[in-house]
Amino acid sequence: MNGLDFDHRVLRPWSRMPSFYMSVTDSEHDVPLREGPEIHNALEVWKHKFPLTEDERAEFRVKLQALPAILAQGKKNLTEEGKDL
Image (tube, rainbow, N blue to C red; front, side):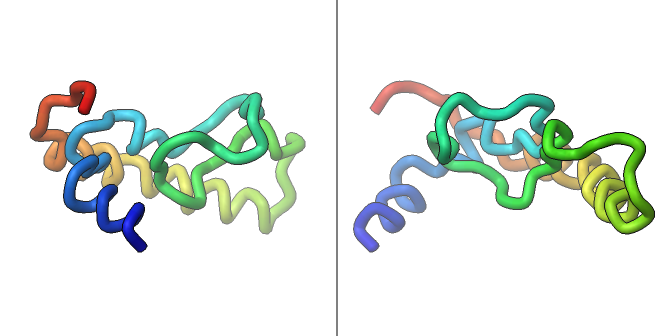
């Protein structure tokens, strides 16, 4: 809980880190778990085999439609200068 409290009070990734809003990945990461804060349930294009099935296409579409809102929220929230602690 202390780490979560520190993230919210001090680090505030949503207001300092543009990478927090990365919501589409086109290749597999080089580590099993992503490093640093992130938006969950990102569109991981590399996991899909094309052409998509109807169910996959619906999920893909929903995630793509969310992108403009995520980017707009990032533009609104990124107000603090990102620098070393």
